[in-house]
Amino acid sequence: MKEYSLYYWPGIQGRGEFVRLALEAAGASYRDVARESEGGGLEALIRVLKAKGMEHPPFAPPVLKAGNLLIGQTANILMFLGGRHGLAPSDEAGRLWANQLQLTMADLIGEVHDTHHPIASGLYYEDQLEEAKRRAADFLKARLPKFLNYFERVLAMNKAGSAFLIGDRLTYPDLSLYQIVSGLRYAFPKAMAALEKQLPLTVALHDRVMALPNIAAYLASPRRVPFNQEGIFRHYPELDSVGGK
Amino acid sequence: MKEYSLYYWPGIQGRGEFVRLALEAAGASYRDVARESEGGGLEALIRVLKAKGMEHPPFAPPVLKAGNLLIGQTANILMFLGGRHGLAPSDEAGRLWANQLQLTMADLIGEVHDTHHPIASGLYYEDQLEEAKRRAADFLKARLPKFLNYFERVLAMNKAGSAFLIGDRLTYPDLSLYQIVSGLRYAFPKAMAALEKQLPLTVALHDRVMALPNIAAYLASPRRVPFNQEGIFRHYPELDSVGGK
Image (cartoon, rainbow over all chains, first blue to last red; front, side):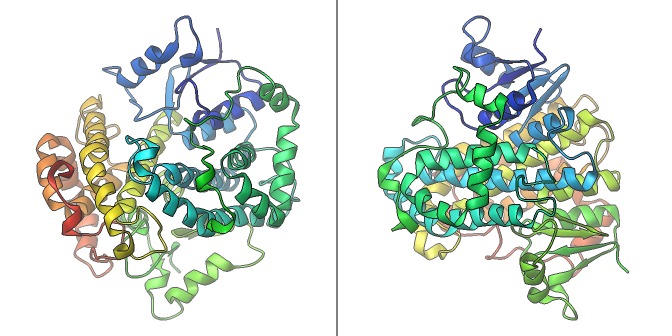
């Protein structure tokens, strides 16, 4: 009997990956239900999303089942897991700060998604290509530097040192910032190569998280879905440029 | 000495309005700093955003100061206020559920914003008008009904009755859903007139919140900024249509 069941689209990292990283860092036992061939699959995910008579129906995946709790919204799931597994500060001010950082990352992740889908999630990329080029250029020129410089500044201003975003040990926003850097390198290699010169603390955090034994083992395992062209981070060379030019 | 200081752009409701509604419903005393002429103004807001040496620098407004705490991100501020003022459930499952609903509303609010700014927040509406028409049409046809039907379903499935989203009393997501319906009616009167026929519980909740003594007094006061064409909810007739057609 596993401790948790994660319900998320099979075949992509997507928002589910932020939850997977927290589960893996915590060494928690979990089912990745929609990726299991027996008793799982997409059908099991759809069943959870459409179930009637459920007390707390989720709007969209990821959804985490923990005992009798069914929890939706990535940042909400991470707040829950952070508290249970020592991946969040224990005081109120620290918990709020962790959640604040995570929600700012959620805003960034939404904007990454919209670089390739600026008009409609339900349309193909090719049907919004011209708009995607305009949006991605603005994103790389104005928005992405603003977000990344912000997290670099948070690391620089951490009074307990710049090894982690909060205090002197790992919390769940560190895991998410690792994933963001990793995804941005896949999606926008040119833009990131230029931006990273100004982000030494963020790059060092990325490397530190990647080297954690539980995370290194996970990344080398088949449990880690590779980046691909169906997720949030997609590599379209025509959208990648230095400073949006 | 007021209990709280809210820092938000003067002149618009924006995301700050969700915080104002919680403060008003709680009967809390607060400064709306950037709207004050003495000791406030836009300068005071910029000062908080750019302050050096701050422990928890915010990325963007709204920001709430509560004693020594400086809290950013709307849903995070609401979670904090909800716990302090009896506007959230007291058990863990209930608190997570309130946060989950609020984050789903935050997703909807982001999509509302992008109907008039699908390419870049930093560009004028007129410079992304054609893209806005495409995005708004998809939003009204596919996304908005999905979100609103979801909240209607949450009300219908509430085992304690359908008067509120959670349990049998007011919580902060109720206030936010009121604001969303109110803003959508301003922005998309035609689309909403058609959609509301299928949303009796949501409309009843809107009316119930609006009639709460503290909220009614607030809405009639000069503290409530009127809807206008600078906020998240903007009325552009060319973007409003029934079913996106």
